[in-house]
Image: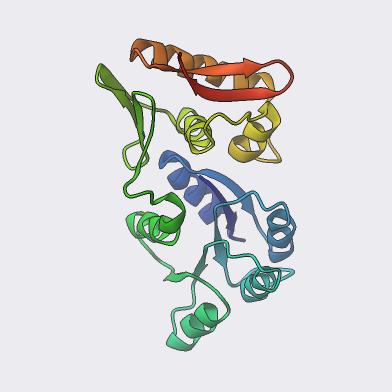
Amino acid sequence: MRLLLAEDEKALSKALVAILERSNYSVDAVYDGQSALDYLEMDNYDAVILDIMMPKVDGLTVLKKVRERGSLIPVLILTAKSQVDDKVEGLDAGANDYLAKPFHSKELLARIRAITRTQTAQGNSKLTKGNITLDRATFELSTSMGSFRLANKEFQMLELMMSNPNQLISSERFLEKIWGYDTEAEINVVWVYVSYLRKKLSALHANVQIKAARNAGYSLEELT
């Protein structure tokens, strides 16, 4: 799952990115409201964490503009303001939830899970294809033969493929969705992570495989 974090306090932003990435989110961080609007035009995010007090364009204005575009992306307002009127203003502007600083990282993660729940809920937190199961709550890939707890980018790549069964996903799409638009990673890093996943699928005796279509992308398909 990919998040946009708009927070102008760079030390806090860096800490939040570390917390979120440890919880298997991909995060793009920006430090002002105009950058947040520019990034959101790309429409490549599952949720936004948005500080209210930011330079150039304040968070509430960003939120209002996003909603005026018709976007329903989940938004968590993150701010030092804790007065009731401020909370009401944020929620009325279209925020899904509101978290005042200071806060505990566990609460932040719980709020993110809550606002994105409708996107990930499919009866439960598990995706299945063939004899493999991917648990979005524990990040475990399993079959009857055993399980692996996947690393951050492994999990996100497999989640993207399992959420789009039998569809080709290009290397560029993986880079944009998981590494971010500003990444300095080379395109071959996608192949490296595909290789990691193939080894784990093989070790678990999975009856699905990651197929590569030359110059087109990768797909997850059941063996016949």
